[in-house]
Amino acid sequence: MLRVAVVGSGPSGVYTAQSLVEQSAVPVQVHVLDRLPCPYGLVRYGVAPDHEKIKSLQRNLRAVLEHPGVTFLGNVRVGADGIAPERLRELYHAVVYCVGAATDRRLGIPGEDLPGSFSATSFVSWYSAHPDAAPAGFVLGAESAVVIGVGNVAVDVARVLARGAEELRPTDVPDAALAALADSRVRDVHMIGRRGPSQAKFTTKELRELGELPGADVLVRAEELALDPYTADPSALPAANRRNVEVLRGWAGRAPTGRPRRIHLRFFLRPVALLGGDGPDGEGGGHGPVRAVRCERTEPDGRGGVRGTGVYEEIEAQLVLRSVGYRGVPVPGLPFDAERGTVPHAAGRVLRDGRPSPGEYVAGWIKRGPTGVIGTNRPCAKETAGSVLADAGLLLARAVPDDPRPALRGLGQRPVEWSGWLGIEAAEAALGRALGRSTVKIADWEGLLAAAGGDAAGVRDRA
Ligand code: NAP
Image (cartoon, rainbow, N blue to C red; front, top):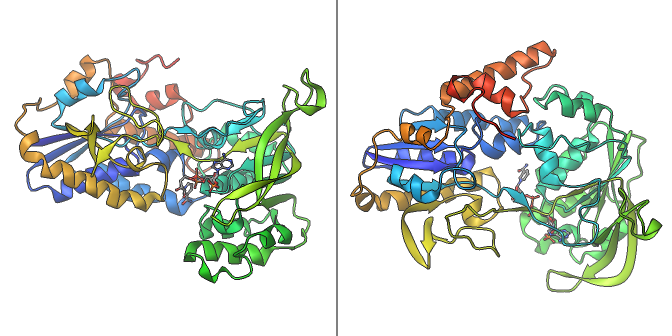
Protein backbone atom coordinates (compact mmCIF):
# COMPACT_ATOMS: atom_id res chain seq x y z
CA MET A 1 0.00 0.00 0.00
CA LEU A 2 1.49 3.32 -1.09
CA ARG A 3 0.81 5.84 1.69
CA VAL A 4 0.77 9.48 0.62
CA ALA A 5 0.14 12.67 2.59
CA VAL A 6 -1.22 15.62 0.65
CA VAL A 7 -0.74 18.84 2.62
CA GLY A 8 -3.58 21.22 1.80
CA SER A 9 -7.20 20.44 0.92
CA GLY A 10 -7.79 23.19 -1.64
CA PRO A 11 -8.37 22.35 -5.30
CA SER A 12 -4.72 21.42 -5.99
CA GLY A 13 -4.60 19.08 -2.97
CA VAL A 14 -7.91 17.42 -3.72
CA TYR A 15 -7.15 17.04 -7.43
CA THR A 16 -3.79 15.48 -6.49
CA ALA A 17 -5.57 12.99 -4.21
CA GLN A 18 -8.02 12.24 -7.02
CA SER A 19 -5.27 11.67 -9.59
CA LEU A 20 -3.42 9.38 -7.17
CA VAL A 21 -6.38 7.12 -6.42
CA GLU A 22 -7.59 7.09 -10.03
CA GLN A 23 -4.25 6.51 -11.75
CA SER A 24 -2.38 4.26 -9.37
CA ALA A 25 -1.53 0.75 -10.46
CA VAL A 26 -0.66 -0.15 -6.84
CA PRO A 27 -3.07 0.21 -3.90
CA VAL A 28 -2.81 3.75 -2.54
CA GLN A 29 -4.07 5.44 0.62
CA VAL A 30 -4.06 9.24 0.65
CA HIS A 31 -4.33 11.38 3.77
CA VAL A 32 -5.31 14.96 2.92
CA LEU A 33 -4.04 17.15 5.78
CA ASP A 34 -5.14 20.73 6.38
CA ARG A 35 -4.26 23.21 9.11
CA LEU A 36 -7.92 24.26 9.20
CA PRO A 37 -10.63 21.93 10.45
CA CYS A 38 -12.53 22.63 7.21
CA PRO A 39 -11.63 21.36 3.72
CA TYR A 40 -11.60 23.03 0.28
CA GLY A 41 -9.00 25.81 0.77
CA LEU A 42 -9.73 28.85 -1.38
CA VAL A 43 -12.98 27.33 -2.67
CA ARG A 44 -14.30 27.83 0.87
CA TYR A 45 -12.09 30.76 1.91
CA GLY A 46 -11.46 32.63 -1.33
CA VAL A 47 -14.33 32.24 -3.79
CA ALA A 48 -16.67 35.17 -3.20
CA PRO A 49 -19.89 34.33 -1.31
CA ASP A 50 -22.09 35.47 -4.22
CA HIS A 51 -20.32 33.10 -6.64
CA GLU A 52 -22.54 30.16 -5.76
CA LYS A 53 -21.83 28.34 -9.01
CA ILE A 54 -18.07 28.25 -8.41
CA LYS A 55 -18.66 27.37 -4.76
CA SER A 56 -20.75 24.40 -5.88
CA LEU A 57 -17.45 22.87 -7.04
CA GLN A 58 -17.24 21.81 -3.40
CA ARG A 59 -19.54 18.94 -4.37
CA ASN A 60 -16.88 17.52 -6.72
CA LEU A 61 -14.13 18.03 -4.16
CA ARG A 62 -16.30 16.40 -1.52
CA ALA A 63 -16.74 13.26 -3.65
CA VAL A 64 -12.93 12.88 -3.73
CA LEU A 65 -12.56 13.38 0.04
CA GLU A 66 -15.26 10.73 0.58
CA HIS A 67 -13.48 8.21 -1.68
CA PRO A 68 -12.51 5.07 0.28
CA GLY A 69 -8.85 5.59 -0.64
CA VAL A 70 -8.82 9.16 0.75
CA THR A 71 -8.99 10.39 4.36
CA PHE A 72 -9.38 14.04 5.35
CA LEU A 73 -7.45 15.07 8.46
CA GLY A 74 -8.11 18.71 9.33
CA ASN A 75 -6.59 20.76 12.17
CA VAL A 76 -3.13 19.32 11.43
CA ARG A 77 -0.28 21.82 11.17
CA VAL A 78 2.74 21.16 9.00
CA GLY A 79 5.77 23.45 8.90
CA ALA A 80 5.71 26.62 11.00
CA ASP A 81 4.61 25.67 14.56
CA GLY A 82 3.61 22.22 13.31
CA ILE A 83 5.14 18.98 12.05
CA ALA A 84 8.53 19.41 10.37
CA PRO A 85 8.71 18.12 6.77
CA GLU A 86 11.47 15.62 7.67
CA ARG A 87 9.24 14.15 10.42
CA LEU A 88 6.24 13.95 8.08
CA ARG A 89 8.35 12.08 5.54
CA GLU A 90 8.94 9.35 8.14
CA LEU A 91 5.19 8.81 8.43
CA TYR A 92 4.35 8.53 4.72
CA HIS A 93 6.03 7.15 1.58
CA ALA A 94 5.44 10.47 -0.12
CA VAL A 95 4.31 13.97 0.89
CA VAL A 96 2.78 16.34 -1.68
CA TYR A 97 2.72 19.98 -0.58
CA CYS A 98 -0.32 21.80 -1.98
CA VAL A 99 -0.13 24.75 0.40
CA GLY A 100 -0.99 27.50 -2.09
CA ALA A 101 0.23 31.08 -1.80
CA ALA A 102 -0.71 32.20 1.67
CA THR A 103 0.14 35.88 1.67
CA ASP A 104 -0.22 38.96 -0.49
CA ARG A 105 2.32 40.74 -2.66
CA ARG A 106 3.49 44.14 -1.41
CA LEU A 107 3.33 47.39 -3.33
CA GLY A 108 6.49 48.82 -1.77
CA ILE A 109 5.22 52.40 -1.74
CA PRO A 110 5.03 54.97 1.08
CA GLY A 111 1.90 54.81 3.18
CA GLU A 112 1.13 51.20 2.26
CA ASP A 113 0.38 50.34 5.89
CA LEU A 114 -1.59 53.44 6.88
CA PRO A 115 -4.76 52.75 8.85
CA GLY A 116 -7.53 52.07 6.34
CA SER A 117 -5.18 50.30 3.88
CA PHE A 118 -5.53 46.51 3.78
CA SER A 119 -4.53 43.67 1.53
CA ALA A 120 -7.47 42.43 -0.51
CA THR A 121 -6.65 38.95 0.77
CA SER A 122 -7.40 40.06 4.36
CA PHE A 123 -10.72 41.53 3.20
CA VAL A 124 -11.51 38.26 1.36
CA SER A 125 -10.63 36.25 4.49
CA TRP A 126 -12.95 38.44 6.55
CA TYR A 127 -16.02 38.06 4.34
CA SER A 128 -15.20 34.35 3.84
CA ALA A 129 -15.18 33.69 7.64
CA HIS A 130 -11.56 32.51 7.75
CA PRO A 131 -10.89 31.83 11.45
CA ASP A 132 -7.56 33.70 11.30
CA ALA A 133 -9.10 36.83 9.73
CA ALA A 134 -8.65 39.97 11.78
CA PRO A 135 -12.00 41.45 12.80
CA ALA A 136 -10.95 44.66 11.09
CA GLY A 137 -13.34 47.56 10.66
CA PHE A 138 -13.00 47.46 6.90
CA VAL A 139 -15.82 49.63 5.75
CA LEU A 140 -16.34 51.73 8.86
CA GLY A 141 -17.16 55.24 7.79
CA ALA A 142 -15.49 55.01 4.35
CA GLU A 143 -17.37 56.64 1.48
CA SER A 144 -14.76 56.22 -1.21
CA ALA A 145 -12.68 53.05 -1.69
CA VAL A 146 -9.73 52.40 -3.98
CA VAL A 147 -8.95 48.85 -5.11
CA ILE A 148 -5.41 48.67 -6.49
CA GLY A 149 -5.04 46.09 -9.27
CA VAL A 150 -7.29 44.81 -12.03
CA GLY A 151 -7.28 41.03 -11.55
CA ASN A 152 -10.16 38.76 -10.53
CA VAL A 153 -9.57 39.30 -6.81
CA ALA A 154 -9.87 43.06 -7.38
CA VAL A 155 -13.16 42.45 -9.20
CA ASP A 156 -14.39 40.24 -6.32
CA VAL A 157 -13.66 42.79 -3.60
CA ALA A 158 -15.01 45.71 -5.67
CA ARG A 159 -18.20 43.75 -6.33
CA VAL A 160 -18.68 42.83 -2.65
CA LEU A 161 -18.22 46.50 -1.70
CA ALA A 162 -20.68 47.56 -4.38
CA ARG A 163 -23.39 45.07 -3.45
CA GLY A 164 -25.93 46.00 -0.84
CA ALA A 165 -26.04 43.77 2.26
CA GLU A 166 -29.48 42.56 1.16
CA GLU A 167 -27.88 41.07 -1.97
CA LEU A 168 -25.39 39.16 0.22
CA ARG A 169 -27.88 38.03 2.84
CA PRO A 170 -28.87 34.83 0.96
CA THR A 171 -25.18 33.78 0.86
CA ASP A 172 -23.12 32.12 3.60
CA VAL A 173 -21.26 35.36 4.46
CA PRO A 174 -20.68 35.47 8.25
CA ASP A 175 -23.12 37.52 10.27
CA ALA A 176 -20.59 40.08 11.58
CA ALA A 177 -19.37 40.88 8.05
CA LEU A 178 -22.96 41.13 6.81
CA ALA A 179 -23.80 43.58 9.60
CA ALA A 180 -20.72 45.69 8.81
CA LEU A 181 -21.56 45.71 5.10
CA ALA A 182 -25.15 46.71 5.94
CA ASP A 183 -23.71 49.77 7.74
CA SER A 184 -21.31 50.54 4.88
CA ARG A 185 -21.38 54.08 3.54
CA VAL A 186 -19.13 53.27 0.57
CA ARG A 187 -20.56 54.96 -2.52
CA ASP A 188 -17.58 55.06 -4.89
CA VAL A 189 -15.25 52.17 -5.62
CA HIS A 190 -12.27 53.00 -7.86
CA MET A 191 -10.41 50.04 -9.39
CA ILE A 192 -7.08 51.12 -10.76
CA GLY A 193 -4.81 49.40 -13.27
CA ARG A 194 -1.24 50.54 -13.83
CA ARG A 195 -1.37 49.34 -17.43
CA GLY A 196 -4.09 49.50 -20.08
CA PRO A 197 -7.47 47.80 -20.53
CA SER A 198 -6.02 45.32 -23.02
CA GLN A 199 -3.59 44.11 -20.32
CA ALA A 200 -6.07 43.77 -17.45
CA LYS A 201 -5.92 40.38 -15.75
CA PHE A 202 -9.62 39.93 -14.93
CA THR A 203 -11.65 37.43 -16.94
CA THR A 204 -14.52 38.67 -19.09
CA LYS A 205 -17.22 36.77 -17.21
CA GLU A 206 -16.17 38.45 -13.96
CA LEU A 207 -15.90 41.86 -15.67
CA ARG A 208 -19.39 41.60 -17.21
CA GLU A 209 -20.83 40.75 -13.80
CA LEU A 210 -19.90 44.25 -12.58
CA GLY A 211 -22.23 45.68 -15.21
CA GLU A 212 -25.10 43.52 -13.92
CA LEU A 213 -25.09 44.71 -10.30
CA PRO A 214 -28.52 46.13 -9.50
CA GLY A 215 -27.23 48.86 -7.18
CA ALA A 216 -24.12 50.10 -8.98
CA ASP A 217 -23.21 52.04 -12.11
CA VAL A 218 -19.96 51.10 -13.86
CA LEU A 219 -18.05 54.06 -15.20
CA VAL A 220 -15.21 53.89 -17.73
CA ARG A 221 -13.36 56.88 -19.16
CA ALA A 222 -13.23 56.91 -22.96
CA GLU A 223 -9.99 58.93 -22.86
CA GLU A 224 -8.25 56.22 -20.83
CA LEU A 225 -9.38 53.51 -23.23
CA ALA A 226 -8.11 55.65 -26.09
CA LEU A 227 -4.61 55.62 -24.60
CA ASP A 228 -4.46 51.87 -25.22
CA PRO A 229 -3.24 51.14 -28.76
CA TYR A 230 -5.54 48.12 -28.95
CA THR A 231 -8.80 49.84 -28.08
CA ALA A 232 -9.57 51.00 -31.59
CA ASP A 233 -8.79 47.61 -33.09
CA PRO A 234 -8.61 44.79 -30.55
CA SER A 235 -8.49 42.09 -33.27
CA ALA A 236 -4.75 41.50 -32.73
CA LEU A 237 -5.31 40.63 -29.07
CA PRO A 238 -5.73 37.14 -27.59
CA ALA A 239 -9.46 36.32 -27.37
CA ALA A 240 -9.75 36.82 -23.59
CA ASN A 241 -8.17 40.30 -23.67
CA ARG A 242 -10.15 41.25 -26.79
CA ARG A 243 -13.43 40.40 -25.07
CA ASN A 244 -12.44 42.52 -22.06
CA VAL A 245 -11.71 45.50 -24.30
CA GLU A 246 -15.01 45.08 -26.10
CA VAL A 247 -16.96 45.04 -22.82
CA LEU A 248 -15.09 48.13 -21.57
CA ARG A 249 -15.68 49.93 -24.88
CA GLY A 250 -19.40 49.27 -24.48
CA TRP A 251 -19.32 51.01 -21.10
CA ALA A 252 -17.08 53.94 -22.03
CA GLY A 253 -18.57 57.37 -21.63
CA ARG A 254 -21.83 56.04 -20.14
CA ALA A 255 -23.38 58.51 -17.73
CA PRO A 256 -24.33 57.28 -14.24
CA THR A 257 -27.98 56.27 -13.98
CA GLY A 258 -28.31 57.36 -10.36
CA ARG A 259 -27.79 53.96 -8.71
CA PRO A 260 -26.62 54.24 -5.10
CA ARG A 261 -23.02 53.11 -5.81
CA ARG A 262 -20.51 53.68 -8.56
CA ILE A 263 -17.62 51.48 -9.71
CA HIS A 264 -14.98 53.51 -11.55
CA LEU A 265 -12.71 51.37 -13.74
CA ARG A 266 -9.51 53.34 -14.19
CA PHE A 267 -6.41 52.57 -16.27
CA PHE A 268 -2.86 53.84 -16.82
CA LEU A 269 -2.57 54.93 -13.19
CA ARG A 270 0.41 53.71 -11.15
CA PRO A 271 0.03 54.14 -7.39
CA VAL A 272 3.08 55.94 -5.98
CA ALA A 273 1.94 56.67 -2.40
CA LEU A 274 -0.93 56.36 -0.01
CA LEU A 275 -1.54 59.69 1.66
CA GLY A 276 -2.56 59.96 5.30
CA GLY A 277 -4.68 62.68 6.75
CA ASP A 278 -4.09 64.37 10.06
CA GLY A 279 -0.62 63.05 10.86
CA PRO A 280 2.40 65.10 11.92
CA ASP A 281 3.19 66.02 8.32
CA GLY A 282 -0.24 67.56 7.88
CA GLU A 283 -2.24 67.25 4.69
CA GLY A 284 0.64 66.31 2.40
CA GLY A 285 1.66 62.95 3.80
CA GLY A 286 0.45 62.46 7.34
CA HIS A 287 0.44 59.25 9.31
CA GLY A 288 -3.26 59.37 10.09
CA PRO A 289 -5.86 57.24 8.33
CA VAL A 290 -5.53 57.04 4.59
CA ARG A 291 -7.28 59.85 2.74
CA ALA A 292 -6.12 59.40 -0.86
CA VAL A 293 -4.06 57.34 -3.27
CA ARG A 294 -1.53 59.31 -5.25
CA CYS A 295 -1.02 57.89 -8.74
CA GLU A 296 1.24 58.73 -11.63
CA ARG A 297 -0.40 58.76 -15.01
CA THR A 298 1.35 56.20 -17.26
CA GLU A 299 1.43 55.60 -20.99
CA PRO A 300 2.23 52.54 -23.10
CA ASP A 301 5.95 52.02 -23.72
CA GLY A 302 5.34 50.01 -26.88
CA ARG A 303 6.70 46.80 -25.31
CA GLY A 304 3.69 45.74 -23.24
CA GLY A 305 4.76 47.85 -20.28
CA VAL A 306 4.18 51.46 -19.32
CA ARG A 307 6.30 54.48 -18.49
CA GLY A 308 5.54 57.35 -16.15
CA THR A 309 4.53 60.71 -17.55
CA GLY A 310 5.29 62.91 -14.53
CA VAL A 311 1.62 63.80 -14.28
CA TYR A 312 -0.03 62.89 -10.97
CA GLU A 313 -3.58 62.39 -9.77
CA GLU A 314 -4.94 61.89 -6.26
CA ILE A 315 -7.98 59.67 -5.78
CA GLU A 316 -9.84 60.20 -2.52
CA ALA A 317 -10.15 57.05 -0.42
CA GLN A 318 -10.80 56.26 3.22
CA LEU A 319 -10.47 52.54 2.40
CA VAL A 320 -7.72 51.06 0.21
CA LEU A 321 -7.63 47.38 -0.75
CA ARG A 322 -4.32 46.32 -2.29
CA SER A 323 -5.13 43.56 -4.76
CA VAL A 324 -1.84 42.99 -6.57
CA GLY A 325 -1.62 39.21 -6.32
CA TYR A 326 -0.89 36.45 -3.84
CA ARG A 327 2.55 35.24 -2.82
CA GLY A 328 3.83 31.84 -1.64
CA VAL A 329 5.21 31.52 1.89
CA PRO A 330 8.18 29.24 2.68
CA VAL A 331 7.45 26.01 4.54
CA PRO A 332 10.29 25.76 7.10
CA GLY A 333 12.32 22.70 6.15
CA LEU A 334 11.45 22.86 2.43
CA PRO A 335 13.54 24.66 -0.19
CA PHE A 336 12.08 27.95 -1.45
CA ASP A 337 12.68 30.24 -4.40
CA ALA A 338 12.19 33.60 -2.70
CA GLU A 339 12.05 35.49 -5.99
CA ARG A 340 9.19 33.45 -7.45
CA GLY A 341 7.57 32.58 -4.12
CA THR A 342 7.50 28.89 -5.09
CA VAL A 343 9.24 25.61 -4.19
CA PRO A 344 11.77 24.58 -6.87
CA HIS A 345 10.63 21.41 -8.60
CA ALA A 346 10.89 19.24 -11.70
CA ALA A 347 7.49 17.86 -12.84
CA GLY A 348 6.32 18.29 -9.23
CA ARG A 349 9.38 16.61 -7.61
CA VAL A 350 10.85 18.96 -4.99
CA LEU A 351 14.44 19.88 -5.87
CA ARG A 352 17.03 20.21 -3.12
CA ASP A 353 20.28 21.63 -4.46
CA GLY A 354 19.00 20.92 -7.95
CA ARG A 355 18.29 17.23 -7.28
CA PRO A 356 14.89 15.57 -6.73
CA SER A 357 14.35 15.02 -3.01
CA PRO A 358 12.96 11.48 -2.54
CA GLY A 359 9.34 11.44 -1.38
CA GLU A 360 8.72 15.20 -1.55
CA TYR A 361 6.44 16.80 -4.15
CA VAL A 362 4.49 20.00 -4.83
CA ALA A 363 1.34 20.92 -6.76
CA GLY A 364 -0.78 24.04 -7.24
CA TRP A 365 0.26 27.63 -6.54
CA ILE A 366 3.29 26.70 -4.41
CA LYS A 367 4.55 24.82 -7.50
CA ARG A 368 3.71 27.20 -10.34
CA GLY A 369 2.88 30.55 -8.68
CA PRO A 370 -0.50 32.18 -7.98
CA THR A 371 -2.03 32.16 -11.45
CA GLY A 372 -4.84 30.41 -13.26
CA VAL A 373 -8.39 29.49 -12.33
CA ILE A 374 -9.48 26.50 -10.23
CA GLY A 375 -9.45 24.15 -13.23
CA THR A 376 -5.79 24.99 -13.96
CA ASN A 377 -4.96 22.85 -10.92
CA ARG A 378 -6.21 19.67 -12.58
CA PRO A 379 -3.39 19.18 -15.12
CA CYS A 380 -0.90 20.56 -12.58
CA ALA A 381 -1.99 17.99 -9.97
CA LYS A 382 -2.07 15.23 -12.56
CA GLU A 383 1.54 15.89 -13.50
CA THR A 384 2.66 15.72 -9.86
CA ALA A 385 0.60 12.59 -9.13
CA GLY A 386 2.18 11.02 -12.23
CA SER A 387 5.64 11.71 -10.78
CA VAL A 388 4.67 10.18 -7.41
CA LEU A 389 3.33 7.05 -9.10
CA ALA A 390 6.34 6.76 -11.40
CA ASP A 391 8.53 6.79 -8.26
CA ALA A 392 6.31 4.28 -6.39
CA GLY A 393 8.81 1.40 -6.71
CA LEU A 394 11.51 3.40 -4.93
CA LEU A 395 9.13 4.96 -2.42
CA LEU A 396 7.71 1.60 -1.32
CA ALA A 397 11.21 0.36 -0.40
CA ARG A 398 10.95 2.35 2.84
CA ALA A 399 8.70 1.12 5.68
CA VAL A 400 6.14 3.58 7.08
CA PRO A 401 3.42 3.07 9.73
CA ASP A 402 0.14 1.50 8.58
CA ASP A 403 -1.74 4.25 10.38
CA PRO A 404 0.17 7.49 11.07
CA ARG A 405 -2.66 8.99 13.15
CA PRO A 406 -1.26 7.93 16.55
CA ALA A 407 2.09 9.47 15.56
CA LEU A 408 0.32 12.68 14.48
CA ARG A 409 -1.36 12.84 17.88
CA GLY A 410 2.01 12.16 19.51
CA LEU A 411 3.28 15.25 17.69
CA GLY A 412 0.62 17.38 19.37
CA GLN A 413 -1.93 17.37 16.55
CA ARG A 414 -5.63 16.81 17.17
CA PRO A 415 -6.97 15.80 13.76
CA VAL A 416 -10.53 16.64 12.77
CA GLU A 417 -11.70 13.75 10.64
CA TRP A 418 -14.51 13.76 8.07
CA SER A 419 -17.18 13.19 10.74
CA GLY A 420 -15.89 16.35 12.49
CA TRP A 421 -16.24 18.34 9.27
CA LEU A 422 -19.79 17.03 8.86
CA GLY A 423 -20.41 18.32 12.39
CA ILE A 424 -19.22 21.79 11.30
CA GLU A 425 -21.48 21.67 8.24
CA ALA A 426 -24.46 20.75 10.43
CA ALA A 427 -23.65 23.55 12.90
CA GLU A 428 -23.42 26.10 10.07
CA ALA A 429 -26.80 24.99 8.72
CA ALA A 430 -28.27 25.30 12.24
CA LEU A 431 -26.73 28.77 12.65
CA GLY A 432 -28.31 29.82 9.35
CA ARG A 433 -31.73 28.57 10.50
CA ALA A 434 -31.39 30.40 13.83
CA LEU A 435 -30.57 33.65 11.97
CA GLY A 436 -33.35 33.22 9.44
CA ARG A 437 -30.80 32.73 6.66
CA SER A 438 -29.49 29.74 4.71
CA THR A 439 -26.18 28.22 5.86
CA VAL A 440 -24.01 30.79 7.67
CA LYS A 441 -20.31 30.17 8.15
CA ILE A 442 -18.75 29.91 11.60
CA ALA A 443 -15.89 32.41 11.73
CA ASP A 444 -13.85 31.47 14.82
CA TRP A 445 -11.58 28.59 15.89
CA GLU A 446 -13.48 27.84 19.09
CA GLY A 447 -16.80 27.60 17.26
CA LEU A 448 -15.35 25.40 14.51
CA LEU A 449 -13.55 23.03 16.88
CA ALA A 450 -16.55 22.79 19.20
CA ALA A 451 -18.76 21.91 16.22
CA ALA A 452 -16.19 19.34 15.05
CA GLY A 453 -16.37 17.62 18.45
CA GLY A 454 -14.05 14.73 19.26
CA ASP A 455 -10.66 15.40 20.80
CA ALA A 456 -10.23 18.58 18.73
CA ALA A 457 -12.86 20.37 20.79
CA GLY A 458 -11.45 22.69 23.40
CA VAL A 459 -7.93 21.25 23.22
CA ARG A 460 -6.09 23.90 21.27
CA ASP A 461 -5.11 27.31 22.43
CA ARG A 462 -5.06 29.23 19.17
CA ALA A 463 -3.99 32.58 20.59
P1 NAP B 1 -3.59 38.77 -10.73
O1 NAP B 1 -4.56 38.16 -11.67
O2 NAP B 1 -2.16 38.41 -10.91
O3 NAP B 1 -3.78 40.36 -10.81
C1 NAP B 1 -2.93 41.21 -10.11
C2 NAP B 1 -3.18 42.64 -10.54
O4 NAP B 1 -2.34 43.48 -9.74
C3 NAP B 1 -2.80 42.95 -11.98
O5 NAP B 1 -3.72 43.88 -12.51
C4 NAP B 1 -1.41 43.57 -11.84
O6 NAP B 1 -1.06 44.46 -12.89
C5 NAP B 1 -1.59 44.36 -10.58
N1 NAP B 1 -0.32 44.70 -9.94
C6 NAP B 1 0.69 43.87 -9.58
N2 NAP B 1 1.69 44.57 -8.99
C7 NAP B 1 1.29 45.87 -8.98
C8 NAP B 1 1.87 47.06 -8.51
N3 NAP B 1 3.05 47.06 -7.91
N4 NAP B 1 1.17 48.22 -8.67
C9 NAP B 1 -0.05 48.22 -9.26
N5 NAP B 1 -0.65 47.12 -9.72
C10 NAP B 1 0.01 45.95 -9.59
O7 NAP B 1 -3.91 38.38 -9.21
P2 NAP B 1 -5.28 38.16 -8.41
O8 NAP B 1 -6.34 39.10 -8.84
O9 NAP B 1 -4.84 38.15 -6.98
O10 NAP B 1 -5.71 36.69 -8.80
C11 NAP B 1 -4.88 35.55 -8.52
C12 NAP B 1 -5.40 34.36 -9.32
O11 NAP B 1 -6.66 33.92 -8.78
C13 NAP B 1 -5.63 34.70 -10.77
O12 NAP B 1 -5.21 33.62 -11.56
C14 NAP B 1 -7.13 34.87 -10.84
O13 NAP B 1 -7.69 34.66 -12.12
C15 NAP B 1 -7.61 33.84 -9.83
N6 NAP B 1 -8.96 34.19 -9.35
C16 NAP B 1 -10.01 33.79 -10.09
C17 NAP B 1 -11.29 34.13 -9.72
C18 NAP B 1 -12.46 33.68 -10.56
O14 NAP B 1 -12.27 32.89 -11.47
N7 NAP B 1 -13.65 34.19 -10.34
C19 NAP B 1 -11.53 34.90 -8.58
C20 NAP B 1 -10.41 35.31 -7.83
C21 NAP B 1 -9.14 34.95 -8.23
P3 NAP B 1 0.04 44.03 -14.01
O15 NAP B 1 -0.71 43.11 -14.93
O16 NAP B 1 0.43 45.32 -14.60
O17 NAP B 1 1.15 43.32 -13.28
